Length: 181
Image (cartoon, rainbow, N blue to C red; front, top):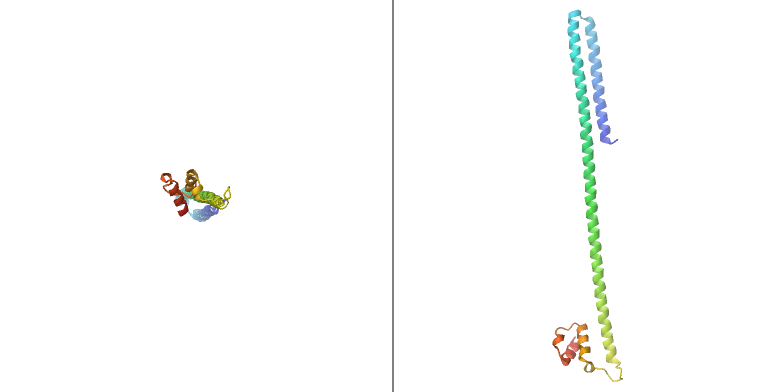
């Protein structure tokens, strides 16, 4: 039983108790008055009591109806509050999940980009070291120079260094561009 249900029950009990007290008091006073009256006024009082009993019963019925309606309103309000709280929690959970998912996606994309950049840097470093090794230790024992490379080798190196316009360059231009980079 919720606090609101308890309050409704307390209210209903208090109304019923007061109605019972009122009815008891009126009944005692009317009984005393009726005993002291002659027959005709006694009949008038009896008729009045019947009206009062009817009014009391109607008042009790009304009080019970009000109590039931108050209980229904309280129940509906409780359900509305519970629904609102549930919807708020659900919206918060969905928002938090979306934020978490978006954050995870952004972190994943950053990791992937970092990984791609690292691989590209590694390829560039390997190519540079390979070029340095060829320049320092030629296979025939004589000092290697870019002049000894084929145009295809120079073009590949220019491609690794991402030299613009390399496709239209001749061998001398490729050598100069590689030296400049």
